Length: 239
Ligand code: FPP
Figure 1 (cartoon, protein in one colour):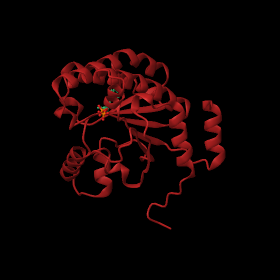
Figure 2: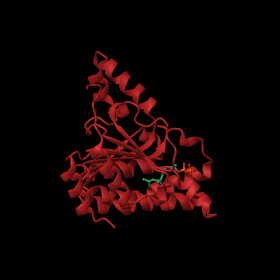
Figure 3: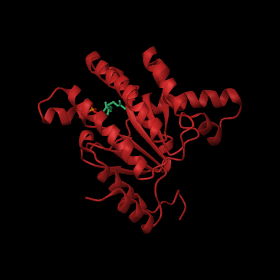
Figure 4: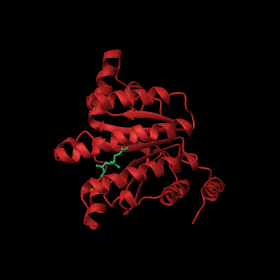
């Protein structure tokens, strides 16, 4: 098994192109549970454990920003039971992991229309954001009630209200304003689509897909994605 140190050193020794900002579409919790004849809720529960592991790994691998797609604006279409399970896990996660973030210099940021979530969740999130706002090692951006089209509409409206609509003025009004440009987008579970995630930010991002279901995703696999990123040539439309 690779240790973090050696993997990071290898990335640096290769081309030095470590991504600054990695985003992950965490997919496959339901299938993971189904394969084991477990309820979907168990898949989500294991999914949260993987979130914990991967946030830790991101810090150890020296990632500046990790964005995780936790709940999309389309996920409201799921049965009420499942939405309740996901919200319950969210509450648990914020409560139990905030201390660890604070201790590990993780700054929490939320993207998406999170203010439409239950008032107690909004309150916990805002408290956590405030409490970790001075942390600098890793930024964990969690996408909650997030949809990229909605984000873009909100950004365009704000930009128009402020004056001219330009690439810069839209960018400055996206939920991701202030984060480094998205370098690498990972999706687990074998699906290869964006699902209304970071449409604008993905303009020049590299994509990395794996068949691994989210509960089985590991630090080693994240490190593998970073290594592969370091070998890709990005031209941004140039030659
Ligand atoms: C996809 O599985 C996953 C989600 C619906 C979102 C990811 C949510 C978590 C990992 C748990 C909550 C997160 C936090 C940060 C507390 P799916 O149900 O779409 O799987 P399937 O496609 O196999 O059915």
